Image (cartoon, rainbow, N blue to C red; front, side, top):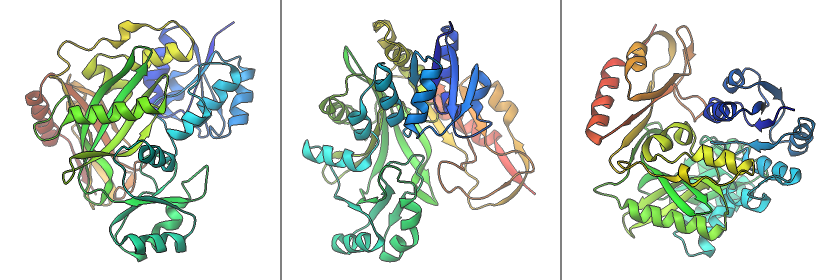
Length: 405
């Protein structure tokens, strides 16, 4: 009998995981709510189902006699994976841990209780409640859903009118509990850090310094990955993140966290953390390219109950020198129909470009970016040094452009 592994969802970010499972001889069935998802092309079969419907996913997994249910680079799949795996008697981080790593309010409570740097925060169930809390705080805040992804429903709040304008948009993305999180805005630079908890301890992986879109300060536009930085203390960030993960009691799992650094008290403040690899191929491409750690191999072995393979934990001997970039193309305030996309040939030929994608084609009408769901496209480059990375950045800028009718 074929050994079926269920992968969810079917987005392009699951493609490296599907490919790895296939290369190991497993039969891969992808579950997703939407038709025509990119990962379907690489799987043996796909099935249309709401991945938030745990009971339905569990029933189908039993029908397929699934040996594992697995996902990477996807927050919203975490609770379903944990619950279904537990019901099937397979390795699982458990439902309590899944909630802690997806519910942003629970993250805040945990950090505060354990003495980690934490912004002021409050849960609000209505516009009136949110307005009252904002008036009491009297400073800039962030309003966000409790458990959404891709920066959907996240808004910077400078005044009461903005709460009234955006509250309904924010709360509609909260899935488990219909409320929003209102929290202090931390003024500072933003970073992400990946890692993996293993039987040999917690291993930090790629750290990125972020830059955001001009028209949306809560949405990533560019991430520069390096081991160290002359201005910011990456060792402190690694230490802060390691402490959080270890104190949660996570036994095994990939993690992806976002922090903001505040100069006034020299601290990294947790924005959010997930028990999964970083999205947009951070887990699938960037982490192994920079560090040498094959986190998806470890994830697969753990989910399947295989013996732990420490060889996947070996850092590259030159990993401290390697750098990477994830850059999302920006059309600015321009809107209209695309006439031409220049530079695709260059992107294909450059060996440092590990992945690129355009969400739109010639003839499509596009609008300014709103959230992670409608960014124009991206490229990922991994280089042996910062000097080489800067050279690649410059070449992409000179070769890639979008023309409108």
